[in-house]
Structures are given as C-alpha cells and as structure tokens.
Length: 256
Length: 256
DNA sequence: CGCTTATTTGAGAGAAGTCAAGTACGGTGG
DNA sequence: CCACCGTACTTGACTTCTCTCAAATAAGCG
Image (tube, rainbow over all chains, first blue to last red; front, side, top):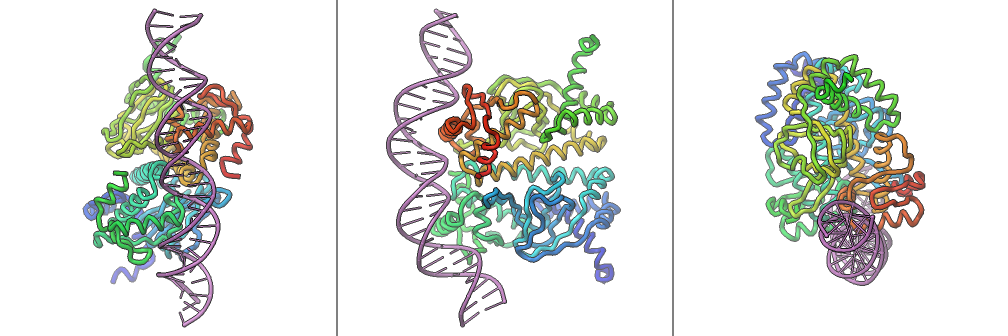
C-alpha cells in the first residue's frame, strides 16, 4: 500500500540497498543469513546514507544486445545490475575478444576505473540497472567509510576471481575450463535462486562462453557434447543444463 | 648525520612512505612529477599518519627462492617490497602453475585477501620488504580515509592489469604474448630506473615467464630466438634484453 | 511458417606441447 | 683463477589438442 504511493523513491532506495547488501553476499553460500545481517547493518548505520545513495542514482534499462558502455568512453558512471545479465569484454585490434566476466543481479561495474572504461559492457538479456555518477560516489566515500570498505571488499573479491580465471585461461584444458565454468555458474545461480539444486540457466551464447574461456565455439560445443555423453550433465536446449554429477565435474575442473 | 642516529625508525618511515608514494605512481609514466606531488601530499596530510604506519611495520628479508607466503596460510600480513623481485602464483592439484604477477620494489601483496592467502609468493631475487599486520592496517583505514582511497586505487590498478592479462592468456598467440610481456616489463623497469631506454633486465627464469604467459619453457625460448632473429630484440645472456624496435614489438603484441 | 542465426558435427591443418638431447651459464671448490 | 658440476636454456623431432573451414541441424523470431 504504502509502497505504491512512494514508488519511484522507494525503488531507488531498494536498488541502492542492493548495492550495499547483495555485494556483501557475493561468494558467500550462507546468503540468507548474511543478507539479513547486512540489511540489519544498513538500517543500523546507513538509514540516512542509503537515502544519500538513492538521491544520486538514476534508473537505467536496456534491451538485450545493447551496449552499456564502451572501451575508451569517459568513465562517468558506476552501474549496479538489478535484473538481467551483462558481459564485460576487451578486444584486440583484429577483433579477437576476451570476455572478462558475466554479471548478474547484485553485481556492479564501472567502479575500479580511471578516467575511461577499459572494457565494453553489453546486455545479454534485457537489463534493469541503476547508475551513480562516479564523482558523487567518490565524494560519498569520505563521508561514509563503511561504503569505502564495502567497495574495497567487492573489488578484492573481483580481483581474486580474476586470478582464478588467469589460472583457468593459462593452464586448464578445454574440458577443465568448461567444468570450472559450469560449476562457477551453478554457484552464482544458487546465490540468486537457492532452489533448483542441479539446474543452471546459461543466458549467454556458446560464442560468449568461448570468449570467456579462451576457446572457440566449436570446441565449447564439443565439450558440452562430451560431458553430456559421459553422463555428467544433461542439456535441455542450449541454455539450460542439469549438473548430474557435481563431484565428477569438480574433479574434472581441476584435472583429477 | 642525523640519519644514522635515528636509523631504525627512519628506515621504517621511509618504507612506509614508499607504500604511500610509489604505488601512486604505478602505471604512470610522468613519475618524477607525480612522486613529488605525492610526497608533498604525504607531508601535508600524513606526517603523523606515516609515523602510525611505521609503528606497526616490521622489516622482512628473504633470500632468493624462499617462500614468503603460501596458498592457504592465514593472511595475517600485508607485504610491501622495498628491494628485489617476487612472483605470485597459483597451482592446480597436479602441479600445473600459473604465475599471476611479478612484483618489484614499490609493489605490495596480501592486501586484497580474505582470511587466507589464495596464492603463493616466492622471492625470485633476494628481497627486502616490510610487512604490516592486516588487522592493524584495517583499523587504520577508518582513521585515515586517504589511506583507504590509496589502497582502493592500487587494487583497481591491479584489477585492470589482471583483465589485460586475461586477454593475453585467452586470446594472444605465443609471440604476441612474449612481445606484450617484454613491453610491460620494459615499462615497469622504466618506472624504477628511468635511464636505460631500451634495456630490460628479467630476473625471472624462462619457466617463470612460461607460467606467467600460459606457455611452456620451450615455446618461450623459441619465441625469444625468433624475435632475436627477426632483429626486434637482442639477447645478452638469458636475463638481459635490448628492445631494438619497440614499435614493431608493440604491433606484434596486438597482432598487427 | 519461413527465414535468420545459433549450435552441432565432421574433416583436416596448425600452433603449441611433449620428449629428448645438446649447449651455455653460474656457482663452488680446488 | 680456473675447472667442474648442476641447473637453466636452447634446439630438434614428433605428437596432440585445439583451431579452422565447411556443412548439416536446431532454435528463435517476426
């Protein structure tokens, strides 16, 4: 009731809450517990602060396939994804592409930047986001040390993930790469929807997966087929996978 | 004169100044200018703070080949390298290794961690470092927002480098990888010793380079030979390289 | 329902890996 | 200071995993 009355500001507040809360949970499996704790933390410390964040944020929606920001653009905004899936990529002059990450609700991008974006962000599915002018965010850091800490923690988590991905790209075989990917996606997916134990939805194309794993589409496809034939996964169309034997997948992901 | 009297505390202060200053310059070519500016910034804002940092730091020296910290160890310290070269690596269970970075004077590690280190750090050459208990550093963040900002900026730079390395590992050919590596090392080297225009010293072994670039020793060696025969570099022993044609190397690094 | 695009599958080529041997380098002890 | 030894580096021959090119099949969209 009350909600519909204050619709716009409330949505803003909610989106910002997400920035503060969900990121805290990223990488954490005991998320119900944790999100409660952090929502609590918000109300304890951030009541006014959440409002401050809400004040500088604006809604931002895009259809699938649209570019959200490009390599070289002035890095004016920090984006927080509320709904949808985004891919972050870098390109070589001849068009070879490396996807450095897939982002989901609760994730953000455009934070760890200098004056220009060093990557391109594109919507894989329709996205609902909110964005914050980076200048204003930066100003808030000095007023809210907690926010700075949060942001640092999020960046650390991202850095750690990047190092894991370097190990994958540099040293794993094609099948190890795909197994690692499926398990990572399953974990991310479980954070958002704790149900659906063994089911993973893959919104991205085979070509996106290839560019994320440093492979070609054909190799990715062959590895999917191989895992399916081995009985480790079951494909339900190209974008839905059931993980039938996680332990075996985990072993394969590390080369055992 | 005065220096020798207050030797120990002075060294501490100097090392911490390095943490605050040199990191600011990383990635910046106009370093003379910048370091002056930031030393100024230090004295303006950090006189007492630098002392606070000095108070919690301890010296830490190790010979070449020694392990500084291991994957899985409790992450108690933040390390700042004063002299020497360090490699950061991750391993797969079967021993395959990925080096995620080479660190030089002014660099640090152990900051973006949770409770345990997710990597191993080893001395390539004898190293002279100082280390800070992370708990105490964390406490200082709330007292010194500037420190937090600095640290966040450093982590951002590191994240950006990690993304570049992902592009290299996932999408570049062996010769592109080596060219990129040589240019990056030359740039890092120029930051430390602005002289010696085309000369780069490589303290690490071929095997380290291979594990950094996602290649084998043999391939790295063959690519060195190939570049030398093409007249783009000149090898002076295995650890010293002259870059004879930077433009050509830069073109090769991106696949032109 | 038809068209376009994405995915899968097949056959052949190539870049990098493996295995093996030779060479050079660096440190140590005579 | 030089000779020796062990390790690191280079080079060669061959293998293999992944890529490339090409075609068939399936899926998604208007």
